[in-house]
Length: 242
Image (cartoon, rainbow, N blue to C red; front, side):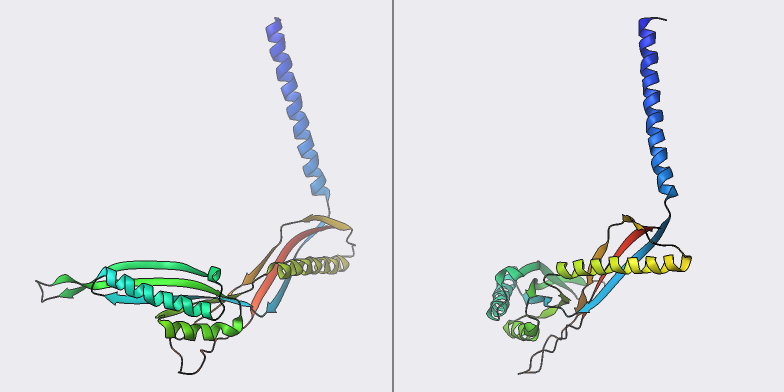
């Protein structure tokens, strides 16, 4: 056998040995896991809370014979709406443009078969989304925006300004709930929980509430808006050993 052939044989032998060694380690890991006696449960927790923030869209639509006139009229009206929102304490950084469009408007004119599209003007739409951090001011914000020139109001959603502490609290409750379930199952089976083998990533979420508002309210009255409650939920998956 030549030196070159011997070298190839040694390399192949070493590679095979390493592969078998790795395979053996993997097999042992799976074997150890399969030998674990586990009770797998899903822990859950939920809570109903009152929202402390609302998000509302305020829109202005204008029509004019020319594009420039439609845009300029819209700009003046939207500026008045924004100033009205700022006037009740909404921070400028909590007001964001979500849509702007300017396009020609056509109508069909004449009798068939000579009927044709005729340019009749231009339409401009501008929409801003505002975060209202004082729930008590929602109705006032809508009234003032309409009085300032808003023609479309919608997309009202309610949420929490800082949901993380509540989410963490519910995740902890979900873990407690999971252990309670596991202990109940273990007791019924005549065994005892000895520890936690695995905790899968849990999740927590706030289900936003949505509402709508009429375009105009009775003069001298504030538009009634109810935030209701929000559902906050958390879930976690745990494998307990026994």
